Amino acid sequence: MNVKALKGFKDILPDETPVWRRIEAVAREVFARFGFEEIRVPVVEKTELFVRSIGEATDIVEKEMYTFADRNGVSVTLRPEGTAPVLRAFVEHGLHVRKPVQRLYTIGPMFRYERPQKGRLRQFHQVSAEVLGGAAPFLDAEVMAAAWSILEELGVDVSLEINSLGCAACRPAFRQELVAFLQQRLAALCPDCQRRTATNPLRVLDCKNEACRRQLAGAPSILDALCSGCRSHFHAVRQGLDLLHIPYRENPFMVRGLDYYCRTTFELVTDALGAQSAVGAGGRYDGLLARLGGPDLPGIGFGMGLERLTLLCGGQEASGRDCDLFVAALGDRARSFAFALVHRLRRSGLRALMDTEGKGLKSQMKQAARASAAWTLIVGDNEMEEGEAVLRDMRHGEQAALPLTFDDPLAAAAAVVQRLGVAAEA
Ligand code: ATP
Ligand code: MG
Image 1 (tube, rainbow, N blue to C red):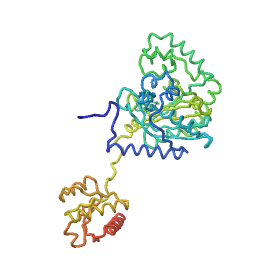
Image 2: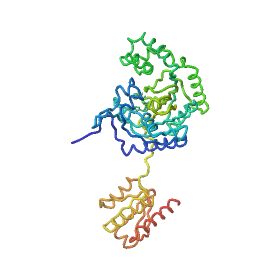
Image 3: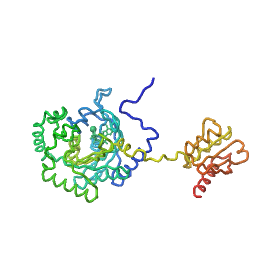
Image 4: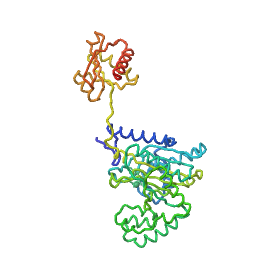
């Protein structure tokens, strides 16, 4: 039997995990500096949570969700994004009483049934951030600044595109104007967009299909249709970004694929990943918390795809030293001593390894080199008789005798640590 992983589900192998750890560490560090707290939520939720929040007429809900009935017939879904579960938890635990504005982030896998390709998987990972309780436009700029800082500190070059989708006061009129425009060109649009013209016309604006793009050249801009509230909000968001010296481009065609956005939306895009140009995206979703049964607090957030980030950071990771000290043991007594010594060394903070398979000296030295050990301690039954082992500096190829108390691994470990400490300073 040779069972393989599911299509679109990827193993992250030992050579790849260092870059993942670095990205996650940078994200956590930046979030901490921006006052975010971590929240962890389940990967499976009731299907209705996503349908209600993301919206029926969206790509995710229409065709991308991993939805199935559990053994009790309850329809459940593997989370396709992070906002809905975090908001569900926020409401369920009454987190709004903790402080007026809460900044939350979570890191973990998301699931979408898509056609797998470079930078597009069925299980992928996101860092996702949600700020609840603040409506000020500077907050939008600050949230973008957090995303921007993560990318900047990772050394990833992206551009920020921003837009406003208006609100319940101004979007309906724009929608009508857009539908009228689209209906005149309906025959030239792709089948998806013909359907979207009726169900979710704004989505037509960011269709990737070339024919649709050509048709959209003279489409009305939502930025011209904003009400005065949305207009001044968007103006202040741009002011905020200017104050932080974060460069951006206005893109009135950028419409996020989720229904819940209002006013500010943004995307962090790169041209280094072909069709998978978005590294991160987000926006304001005032009203969503109330829609999920919570208090009517405004919210804004973003999600950033870690696979795409690893592709952009790829190869940057210097492979770390796996091992400080390799203990090469020759003979049964020496092996028993080494076994206890390695354990003690590990407990005093050293990355220590030994051969467990009773190999010869040559093979053990090879193992030490492969682990890029800084030091090797050679212990043989003969050396033990004489009360000393041989310590070899693997980087300089020098070696010297090291007296050790072989009947006391604890003391021997202390002597090794002291010697390495002294040598490291020299
Ligand atoms: P796309 O237009 O590429 O499908 P999206 O608009 O569906 O992206 P969002 O829902 O905004 O993506 O998710 C935020 C980020 O998560 C994206 O910018 C991307 O980096 C990442 N992402 C989304 N879907 C996938 C996927 N299937 N595989 C890998 N990363 C993904
Ligand atoms: Mg998508």
